Amino acid sequence: MAVSSPPQGLLPAGGDERSVVARSRAVAAVRRTRIGVLDVSVVGIGGNNFGTDFFGRPCDQETVTRIVDTALDLGINFFDTAEEYSITSYLGEGHSEEFLGVALRGRRDEAVIATKFLNISEQEPAQRGAGRIVAAVEASLRRLGTDRIDLLQQHQPDPDTPVEEILQALDTLVRDGKVREVGCCNLPADLLDAAAGVAERSGLRPFRSCQVQYNVLERPSPKVLDAAHRGGVAILPYFPLANGLLTGKYRRDEPLPADSRLGADGLVSQLLRDGLMARRPPLSDARLGTVERLTSFSEKRGHSLLELAVSWLAAQPRVGSVLTGVTRPEQVTANAAAADWKLTSDDLDEVEAIVAAEESNDGQTPG
Image (cartoon, rainbow, N blue to C red; front, side, top):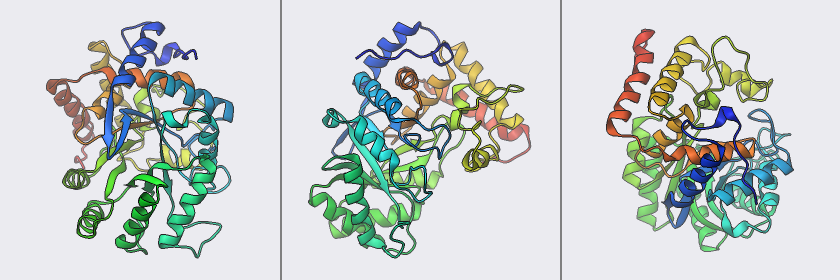
């Protein structure tokens, strides 16, 4: 199958379209990491735009299939979705899972599928704890059209269910062959430590991964990273491109692309523009100034801002796979090529200085 070429605005610096495609194949095919027993590509695909408008423009089935085929052809094998990702319900009916399942027909064994379960179902609000987890898995398996989930993740902390009950349910699913590895998302350090302790004492399958918001501009708590290190937990960054800021698509005094995450006309996009889950609004002068300085840093070294965003994360300790959200096949090609830059220690130090300057320049204290 032919691999889509990126438009000029997505081309990493230093190459024409054919060289980018060739680099993408080579880089994605050889750069792999381990999450427990899973062999995953260092660049993954986030499915939160597959059939859902939750984060901006949705992808139809044809587009999702082209995205998945492009990724697999490049050697990208890791796909992340969730029952929450849906059009009609905030709590989720799994439309993204359905789209991914259709796209993987005939190629399922080439892929590593990660999905997530919610603590509560809109359809069965009284169903909680282990019963909710098992029901969620059965529904996800049906929607994905598969007999196993490679990585099952707890989507958010559950204050109403003991960690022992959660891990016991997950361990049973692994033993039954319905799940291969288990992980979590957005857990604070104390819960990561507690889960690791329970798993060790009880002989249960431990969390192998934890998804957190992580990019050059927004970092997880150092306590979370330390807990992941103690527990041998791989970090899976989401929003690695800071909702598109680190692609260079948003510029001062220019209109926002209507089909972009920050430019879309929707509640979540408005909340993101206002600074949800960020230290400051993404389109503020201070933040855009930092992006401009990072762009200049990259271009002086013959690279693009996109390459910096992906390669910087790939260079961080305990990062397993960088989950890039995409809406077009050419973005897959560009993201795969972006992992190729091997940043030196001096490069990393200079990036830190640029980001720290954002704080000092407007009088705020680094968080």
